[in-house]
Length: 523
Image (tube, rainbow, N blue to C red; front, side):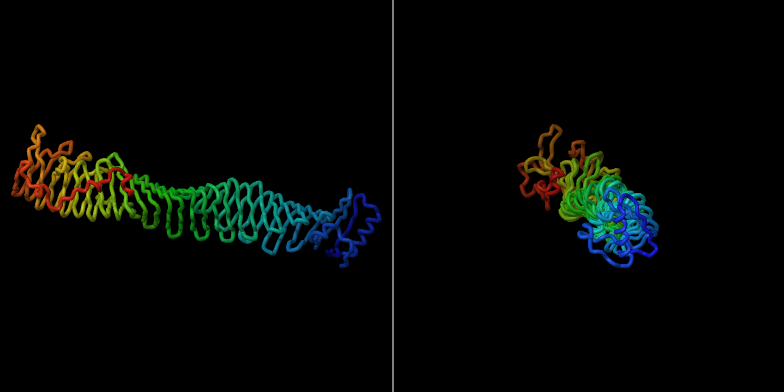
């Protein structure tokens, strides 16, 4: 220890004169740089606090407790830490300091702590700051009213509320612990991180102030202008604006909801990846999609779901389900029109309609479902097939069905009996969700099992013509049939028609492929 020449000494208390003289001798020796041989207990166990400067020094001793009161421009030092204040009581035997007035601690040139009052344990190198407390390390600034700081471990904590200011963000909490060596901070209870683009609410959160990696270790809610995110765990890189939400996690944005076990999000390109028990809901379009995983590209409005993908939507006051390996949805950024594509092993199910194909396309600009590659559709009691199918929807109801190239319609008429009609093109109109009429054009052929008015079986009618028109009753039975363009018809008694003539060419009854419930769509 060294004292400046301007130091003045004053002794108060009950110390006897001999002790005062001895102290004067000790001060005189310290003044001129000489040491003394008898070190107190605290000096043997830890580094003593060094008095660098004080405008005034008072020595006090009461009840066996020795204390130096330093005032003015006080500067103390211990190891890599320096303390400035306006007044300090230095308890020598305990190596303890009580300071007040513009308290400032600097450690390792980079860590600065400020406060109105300080209690410092030099034995353990632990400081307690109170008042208007501020701690900074170059990466963040911490504000609180009471702060405990361990100079050995370089660890700070508060228990009565505080806030951390870092770059563009401000974080508040009831409690916090900050490791200034690793730059890891743990915030507990009523945690709020405010950023110009979002606000994070949590009960427990960890932040690295150097890398600005924010880790969620409790249920967390992130709110922005466009929506909010809920998760139980994960992390958010505040610099790169990339995140992983786990939990499961939920994202709500612009009327859309996404839920999955894990959601990875990159805000700059607007890319989102979801994995595990994915569920996406578009409330405006009344669409729900589930699957094993998916991705969403925000600028293009491209959404991709794969792995037992299943779409459901309201259709004819009922639910329509579409299942496939992969579902793709593209929303036009300008007019918000939607383009939907399902491919590989596509299956469709509703109470009134079922279908299978290899790929399916829907666009709400023309309200057409397009079914490709060996499509088969079941409507009422009819099985319909063609090379390509177009299903037109009006006000979420089936309006018209177009079968292009090798159109074929089959209806079971009894055990091993089938009504059949085929042609190049088939158009079916629906009314209130039921078949109303059917028009077959180009090389039309049909085989129908005929009944009289009493529902007695008459025989089998086989017709070839240019085209035909069929009208159906409310039970989906043929009420009227018109054969046009040079029809050729033959009515066979059941026993007289050869078995090979009872099937039109390309006949294929595919009842085993018909989905019977929405659960069939995932198998």
